[in-house]
Length: 485
Image (spheres, helix red, strand yellow):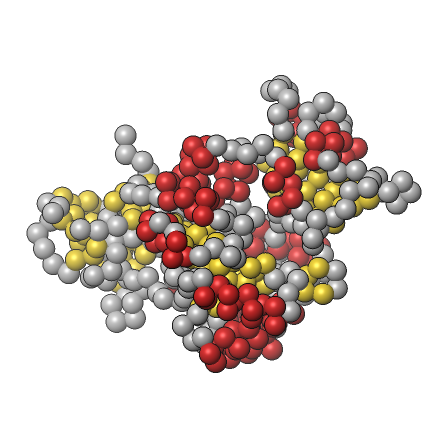
């Protein structure tokens, strides 16, 4: 068995007893305490940290956005700019759907969503689908509305809204919370295309230093899990996937069961009420427990949703202590929310990268920032806290997440909730934790998942951390980035 030594490095173990070393010995996919090296890599003083863990991302959507026209605030600042970006892409011809992604209605000059009539300026013959940066809104042109079968008489899908022109009642082109409905009507990808797309997304994560990732799709079924299994393997980050409710775990193939994670539930606001009540949520959780799910992960953003998720955790802890409870996002968490989650025993997967990518939007929308991704308050509590990028809806870079957590600066440099900054070391610990809060450390016996960085993030200015280069990424001792020729 080959033994490899990485030396002349600044090794951050993230262990309190042994905080730093100068080298790392790897064999059999794990870190070793001793041995004679067959091969030595001199890292020239680079920094080694544990592999980054992305506990919440969307692999297929990442691939879809990669193939879409970039309409993010960095690229587009007006409706005309949006039309120009899409028109340039439309020049390639063809009649297939044209996709754009990442626009933000509050960060363009007009401070409004585009409409079908705006997108018709790009094409009336080719269908166009534009996705909001949050993923919760879409805009289609007139041709797209026709192909989706959306007319003045079309009823909204559950929880969704078809925006309509006041005078005529005709759809304006803006569709809210209708992503599933739209996806079901679009041309489906072959399994081979899906495998290739997910593989590409995992490779991009590897280029950011990610060695483990969890797909947080709330519609993942056994078929999609099979696609992820076909993608997973040596040469890519380790991967797991959440599943939609109702999937019996003990009938999954062994390789599928190994990757199956918590059941994902969208706990959202529908009008003035939440999509679920406590009794309904508890009944669903008990059903998932009977089906063999290891736990339930709830998308919860608003304070009311976070409080309800915590209530469920408290209820389940009494009679099902072996059933895990996770809260995804917990974005707007005040002190009472944090106290309730602490009592519940639930873990939280948070997205500090949104402070950078959406901070300007939060300010423009008037969102109170004192309880927005309150990292310092979470760290002061006993709540298990871990990191997720929510990519592509947020930056997929863990280094950007560290920067945002330590600086609380938005894309434009605006301070967003400065009282909730945390130390860079704590931010580094955050992005190297598993979803249950277990810390990944570079110690003998641990998996050899690590990242080689051009600079030490702890000694880098907090607002420059995202500029650090990922030199190489290793999973189980195998280099997964950059790819070997």
